[in-house]
Image (cartoon, rainbow, N blue to C red; front, side, top):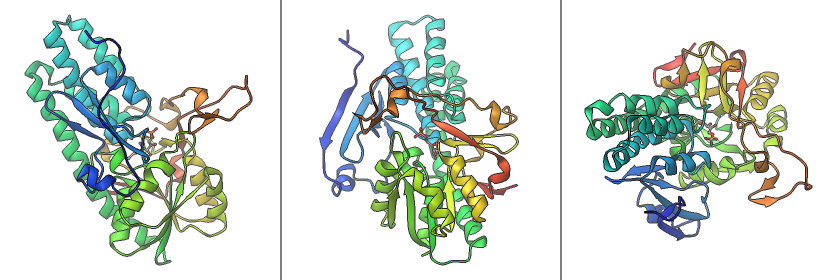
Length: 354
Ligand SMILES: CSC[C@@H](O)[C@@H](O)C(=O)COP(=O)(O)O
């Protein structure tokens, strides 16, 4: 019997900034890999300072990893959720769980983070194959991963075409928020995939990377991915974004999405709507890049999207260090909603969606 629910580290290597590509042997970091018996996660809370892998073989361990953002980003959560069904089924078969216990485990998994449509969708898609056995469940998870990477490559091409058609300055100064790259997906990235494609076409001068308080996905993860891809970037405080846009220092803003309502309203990392407002004021394109599966026909409008409210303690600390006076509470919505009319372009693998 396991003594505690704490994570086992399959590999814990503290390394410098440079060698990480050699350590992973993969030019693109993969957020998760199925080992055959467990799910190996690249712990994103430790990046970029340390390369830490977590070996997870219990669905509730995966729930905990998702809640603390060891694995994160809407598409990656979808794939993780599908593999989580495999973990739950293995446990159920090994330990002789009652059907109700399996259902409860799947419920905790699909509700681990409520805003990203992909997590619940990934769990539901894999769970539908439970009657066909573990191999069928794993096949769904692998298929979701392959489809996501293919979608991202197409999003990159369509997005680059769309951005170049709506901008004149070359090369471009791009602004992005949060992390939408390989770490957030099954590969390549959504908004960051568009940036990669623009860079491949010689069209990127610099990327303004919002640090993305409170958990710093921009400064820790996006800047790391851009640097590895050889794309020039500079990290700015989130509060610098609107000013940079209004000063004419940005030609286009590119962001991802966690869920898009049927009316086109976009839920994404908190801080996104402020960027959209500034882009509208400055009359520059605000571009959302996301897979078709991010659009939720069952959610009529942005006001209907569940917004994850995280522990206020996260905003009362900076990189784990307390910064606020004792006794002051935090307010910590993880996402916000950008009204559809502020979105210049919505790009999916199908092209520009109107
Ligand atoms: C391709 S990722 C799109 C979104 O999931 C991303 O922009 C984002 O908001 C991620 O939030 P996170 O809280 O880090 O999971």
